[in-house]
Image (cartoon, rainbow, N blue to C red; front, side, top):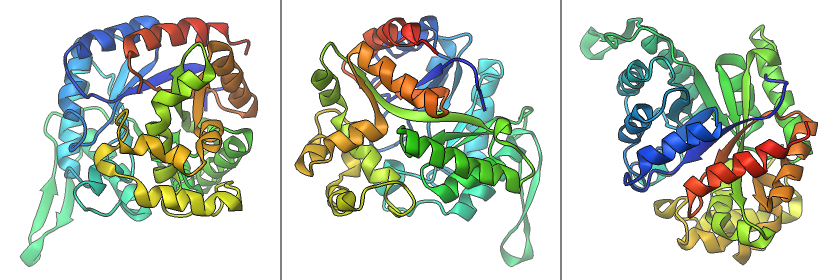
Length: 344
């Protein structure tokens, strides 16, 4: 786990390709370490087209899906795609993996289980390293999985919200993208879970590359920064608490409000600005809770204070979101007025 100054990656939603390459180049020039692309086939542009364009417009950034899942594509298909991206990128690819959100909900598929995620991490690691995997097939025939020309085991980062998934990341993943929140209590709870998993596998917390997912927006007034990301706050409430609210540091008086938001959440409008989900945090009186829990948003001074609060609790690396009307202006302003003004 990184322990020095703050580092930042960013996640984009590829809603259009016009100007996409320029945005990726400017993100790298601004000083970000990691560029992630959302994967939701019914909502956004195709992940691997967006990644290939990003690779061709950058030289240094790590790049990869943030996140894909093991269900909408066969694992061999994902391994092949990632190995190809890695080849073009000169070894810069990283693979973010999760249980599935809008990508699976929009086709009526169930999310991956913990056991399925663990098997997927191991399998994808072996396939991208060039190994051949034997699987039992029908009628007694063996199936052989292999990705020809795959030569480098691509690092795998597990997106995790609950204690059990965080422990799984600590056991088997190269890194973890923590989506449970950014309050000091939640950061300590999350780090403890990752460390438990790491210890179970004979590792330490330092062996796990930990990144913290933050719904992010900048404006001169705090209220103006929060408005554009209300759909993203609704998405966090829908996803982070979908299986259970227990053990996640959520006040009991908010449980039913969160369940009501989840019942109304529309996965076909996942993370889309101005869509139906944007009204849900206000409708269920959850906006203040969700901002404090999941967001780094406000005027630059507000964002500096929020990042420093998280860092004091043990966070160091942040995957922020570029889900804003003008992402090109946002990446420049963030690195200049927030990252450049941190005192720790």
